[in-house]
Length: 358
Image (cartoon, rainbow, N blue to C red; front, side, top):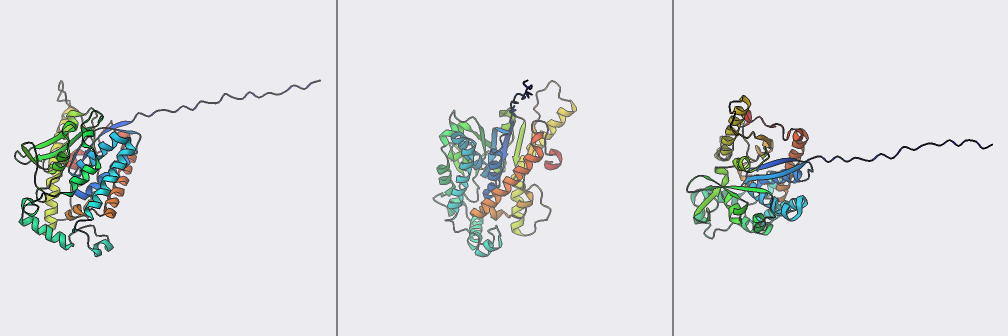
């Protein structure tokens, strides 16, 4: 007699359900600071790798403006990978251009890891010249190697084309009126970016049309209002280069000048943060019923502990090793910020505006 055959019914294979996580949108605000802008390069490099993030707009000044323009061009031409490559190529070109400058770290500074140029005889001489003569006198040909670096790094027509979906804003200071000038996509040229980074002690004012411009850091480092009025996302991530606070009292001439620069280049941002804090309080108190006010969510990435040890002279140090150190520091700070604050994007500020800026 045949034995019954035991059969085992196999469960149907489970379907793997892949949940698409909607990316959160950030606007970026990038400060200027010469070679210290390599820190911002590192921050952007890490943020571009993050699939959970989208970007709507960017406002930037000086070295931040260069980072912003190069990143935007890279996004247009090659997506996020293209933006990372464009930024890396740009900073490599900056380092190559600086290699031909007589202003270099001394062999002892290289050996000890001192990133300042204050011991460099050519720097000391150049610093003295800029205090006695204007750039119209000591640089009659108006030579600025950064112009060629920028022209080699991007096609500015692409930034003004319909292919550019990114809202790009670059800040400069109108020399005659003292007002901030914001160049947006349709207005952005090489001259506009050079104007944003024009330090008046080093370079002639950049003339565009009938107006002349100096570094945007004096009146907007960076300005936040273009993101408030021009972008839907309320989240703004500020990448700080200039330290807000410095515990030690500056005593030497160099330390005093350095601190004056830091205060000057932070003042406009602090004023805007005061206005944002005021509007936020009005919204929270319910005293603005019937009025259309936008709640801004402010975030920040900084490296004050690193920048406090770097003098103003190091902003002219474009040695490749120094730039990559700052880049790596920027990547690490961005990674740490994402780990701690990503869940708060779109919900709340991750910076205590009142205690940080006021």
